[in-house]
Image (tube, rainbow, N blue to C red; front, side, top):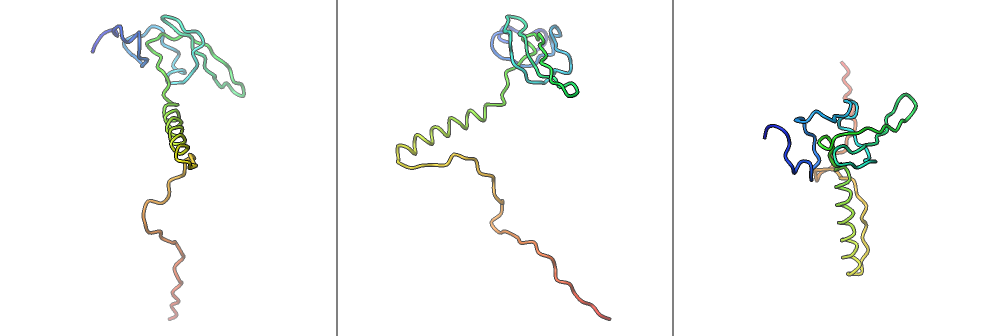
Length: 125
């Protein structure tokens, strides 16, 4: 658990590792997503768009492989696409048509309360 990472770290998974300080990107780029433009053995080149005033600059930085991890932002989308394709195939075999659009979640309770102003109680002394 201590010391430098083992061999599987360099071969398969991409996660942040603080036991290696070489090849750390500048702190502005920590946790940012980018595109690998130059895959190398030790330090892939990563391209990131940086906003500077009104301009967008494409910055290319070398980052050691220990400090890179694969993005997981599209996993739920790809899983939903596969599920929808399966639903469409099943519906096609049954001769039905289905709607695969996402529907916003409705109210939680069974009873719906209507909010209305209270009547004015006239008190004349």
